[in-house]
Image (cartoon, rainbow, N blue to C red; front, side, top):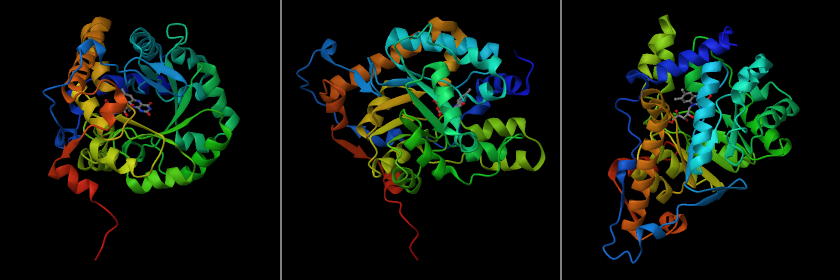
Length: 354
Ligand SMILES: Cc1cc2nc3c(=O)[nH]c(=O)nc-3n(C[C@H](O)[C@H](O)[C@H](O)COP(=O)(O)O)c2cc1C
């Protein structure tokens, strides 16, 4: 299973993502610029705090998706199974990595099949918009059906592609692809970035194409430009090193996408604590997504390590909700917040004026 070039690339991506060099260094999520206001009289018990949410027809016990990472080799198939079973046990959503490998080699499909260990999770399929553009909708639908996904993430990753040695360089036709899939796919379509964020202009174009669900996957966590720069050579490597900090901080992207009035915003990109999740929800996210920190915990300390990280994050969100007096996520979403100047500047950004 692991001899194909795609399988090798998938294993390489996971290995590089686990290293120090895969994170943004100076670009922050700017979620620290969102101050929530303390309530000394919450009139709640901690046990009463309800973190449940409905999304795409599934009930989540906690507003978190273990975000799209992998599949396409036996090693990464094992990672999918482990993480999906944690999501099942704890009531999170689970995102598969790009299913492109399944198209190239149907024998790799098994590495994406997690329904045996995660029958009830909110399961998100995944394909690049460039691949989807070049496929009939029936082929994309087959990817959804073969894994039993509830919704399909269609990822936009131009920054990664331009630095990736095997990357695509032609990004024309993306909006038309989204419009077609929204019309024809027969399940929710989530437009998802992979760590560089979604701008207001892009969110408006997606919305005009009928897209109602966006995962901002903003900057501040994993830098795919940095990861690909480690694999690239020559000019491409130089471009990658120059642009390793490129992207819209997660909090800034959330604030922008909110203006486009879509139904669902998923806040992925540099989320590492329950306080981050609370801040993201206060900025308009329905749920948050975490990718690399969970993978790192799994790789370092096994399943128990990943669960311990997630338990801590749950306790942090619950405590934060109590301390703002929010007994559920709807109340958290409307809790007052103070925005710091760095985030304010992004929120005020508009078309250039001369
Ligand atoms: C090892 C790894 C593989 C990834 N593969 C995909 C992918 O196939 N499709 C996708 O949409 N995003 C992919 N991502 C991006 C994540 O879903 C997420 O948007 C990004 O890593 C930011 O979240 P983080 O800072 O919590 O890692 C991948 C991330 C990691 C760490």
